[in-house]
Length: 230
Ligand code: MN
Image (cartoon, rainbow, N blue to C red):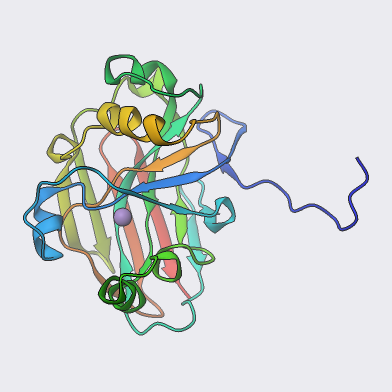
């Protein structure tokens, strides 16, 4: 292959025990915890819906380190959304929920950073969310832990603190659409590929961060994700 410009390096996430997981696509589930759906002005139960971020929105933050994101342009309301991230190791179309776990390579703690003011404006106008969701450094993610090590993650605390003060607190068992159901629905719409990541939604308590804040997310069994806003 003779590229006419240098190709970008593939986005990658560090793996517990060594190695890197190369990222193909990033799918995100909207409003997947009832209490968060309510805080966003919805009734709490609706069919799942999806949006995407570009793979190079990843900011990889190895366990035990503090990552950094730059405060993005055009917004005055940058929100944190702490989420369980599922990494797909085996692709497929029309994967049944009952078979979904065999397609999961592992899990990580992730942040779906959101320019809420821009997202809200796009919602109001019935336009795509890209500008609110799919910007550079909008997907900080911690070390990926293999499912072989964690087992299926079906429950456990998911929390986010800003400057040491807890803002979001939920439990994975509160997901409206479980990870397995999400994989079934996603794979009906897109052919899932090895390397795909799925951000599975955030519990209530989303809010703004400003320059100088430090976010610390945690999911039971996975460790922590620490990110500063520069
Ligand atoms: Mn989200």
